[in-house]
Length: 212
Image 1 (cartoon, rainbow, N blue to C red):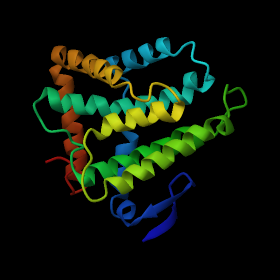
Image 2 (tube, rainbow, N blue to C red):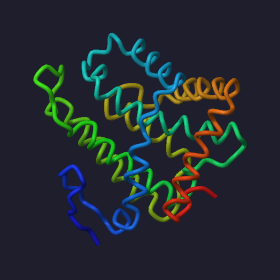
Image 3 (spheres, helix red, strand yellow):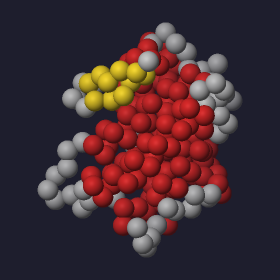
């Protein structure tokens, strides 16, 4: 079943039955994908340096940074759970389906919100990336509808690079970025504990646990 239902900000999304049954959790999860933490800022800083001379100017687009921040917020969460010797919160079919829809909502929020006259890039310029990544998310939803995928967060990062035409197989870079979070949580385990509490509270509030 699918249903075109307007969201609270007037946009229309194609909502299947899973979306409708988990709408509150998906929206809340999407809103959480915006960490401003020190390690995440360092990851984006290194990304900025590495691709400063890339021929595709969109690589340096401000909204690209915002979306990459959302994706790496997922890495931060995974590494927080790992720091506390807990299973990834994105290891089940339900959690992955929520994650994919939440990230799709974030994609729309970042790239479809109004553009100011002085912005460097327009929606039209971003649209090829947006359409490619949206298709990628839909493909993953279908692929992982019956069984959970392994390393789904890594897949989301690689999908970003692929849609941008950069380093689509750069697993080593992802490992390096994960180590940035690991090193931070080794020094600041309280931060890892706080992240876990936030996600556990979200799961309990919606009466449908994402973690095992």
